[in-house]
Length: 564
Image 1: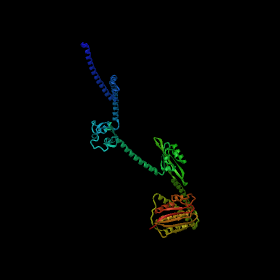
Image 2: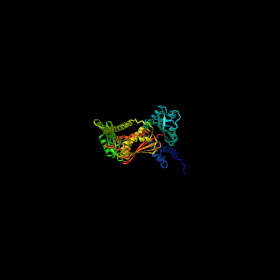
Image 3: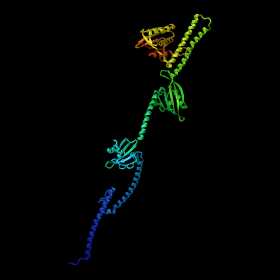
């Protein structure tokens, strides 16, 4: 057995080896600690970046050192910070743009917190609601805007805080201004309201304009109602057209005349609004000439008679140019009939006056120049002159009566109790002597009654009626006078067996100058007798009407008051 001492070099090697092992263990522990630290910090950085942390099975320690995640994350953060700087620059620019819009917008805007403290506002809000003050941030809007007053029940801020939704508050009055207020909530991730944006739209001028517009509309409606009333009440047709002749207005009278409606004619040519050839020609001529124009035309009524219309058109000018046309269509049938009757009356009156005048002059000349006239012949001549003079006097009297009545000087009626029997006997006395061809019969159902009348006026009425009965039954015949009591009135009727009249003639018989046959060779008369009869009877509160048929004679009925 070898007991040699151990080799010194061998002993040191073992000791060193042990130290190295210990140091190696220490380094390994420190390395593990560093790797854990690196892994933990890398996970923290990844968490900050919002990515998934590294799992040991995904990346071992050797790969972790080789991959250098901290370096990669650092580079990512550098890029993120660069992007953040760009984003912040854009956000700053956007903020400036929003601020410019915020300050320049027409509405007043305030941003409040839930406790009504003012966060910010634009210039309009500062001037209109905060009275130009600059020290308002953080102060309550109730103190700065409402000035400590009890808030109105429609506070937009409170409404938003209660509902959590956008709220509208219309007609909020502040001083001399009125606003429509819109409250918009701003919420956090927990759906809690953190701010309230209040937008105040000033509607003061709008309300004034609306009020003025309402007044204008009311005035326009009233004016339109007046115009519509005028158009509706106009008996004349009215048509308005533009410069091209298109219909823009038409009243009911024109619709009836043209047999169309305004709705059907609106916008169409005025010439196409009618099928009447004469009117179409008139309208065409009006548009071509561009000048004031008038004309007359005739239309046939449903009963076959003719109706005369006068069309008068005026040109509307605007700055010397034609802007439209106004056309009136007036029924002048009555006027033309009156003109015709006047012409016929003048012709008839001239004939009626000339005939007795010629007789008066002729017989007067015979008396003047005849040297030998016996008493009988002279008496006949004088009697004829007297008769013709009476005829002239009757014509002149009728004319004067009508003239006084037309001038408003109605005959003065003095009513007294007059026996109807005596009245009839008095008026018939002269007719029975002068009208030998006719037989006069009287039938009074109740004799001895008293009429409350003006005796002379009713004598004139009966004389006119009997005179007409004699004239229009020239071949003779029976003329009846009948009377009957009707309550408080008495009806007197004069009937003949003469020519009779049509319904149209009977309707017009009481018109001035009207005669059923107006030719000069017809039965004499001025056409005024029945007109005077109507005036005198109606002056007594009575009525007069005609019952007749062509060839079957005529009955004229009158009612007169009784003396009770």
